[in-house]
Image 1 (cartoon, rainbow, N blue to C red):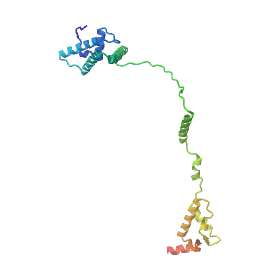
Image 2: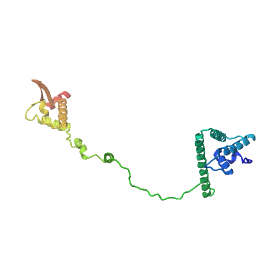
Image 3: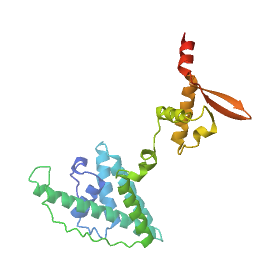
Image 4: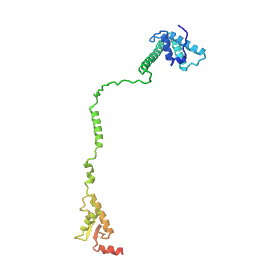
Length: 245
C-alpha cells in the first residue's frame, strides 16, 4: 500500500485535494474512511517532501496534525469523539469532491472560455397573497395609505375660508366712516366710533383712521367725566395750513 509517491505539492490545490487523490489511489470508500490507512499515506507524502528540503504549506501541515489527532483519539476506549471528527472530515471531502465534479462539467460546457451562460428558465409567479392578518391591522394600514394619498392632493377650498372670505377694510374707508359720524354732531364718544364695527379688521381700520385724523388735526380728543370725547375741527384745513407756515 505504501507505494512510491511521485507527485509534488504543486499538483494539488490543497490538503483536501491530496486526500481525495489518496482515497482514489488506494480505492478507499469515502463514506467509510479508514483513518489509519489514510493518515499513513498522507504522512509518507509530507515526510518525503521534508526529506527533499521542500517547503510544505501550513495548510498541509495543519491537516496532518488533524489526521494524527483523529487517529490518536480512535485508540482510546471511548471513541464517540472519533466518529464525530470522522464525519466532519468526511463531509468536507464529499463537499469538495462535488465542487470538483461540477467545475469539470462547467469547464466542458464553456468550451475553453471562463464563462457559463444559462438558458432562460420560465418562472411561474404565484401572485396570490397567502398571509393572514387581523382586520384591525388591515384597517390601520389602509388608513395610512389613504392618508398619504390625500396629502398629495391640493388643499380644500374650505381650508382658506378663514382668510379669503374675511372682509379686508382699508384705512381710507375707515377715515370716511369716522368723518360720517360728525355730520350731525361735532362731538362723539370714543367708544361709539367702534359700535358699528362687525369684525376685527373694521376695528383696526377705525382705530388707524382716528390716528391719521388726529395727526392731520382734523379731529381732537378730550376727557370729560372719565370718558374720551372725539371732537371734529371745522377749520382743520386752516389749522393745518397755519402749522405748516
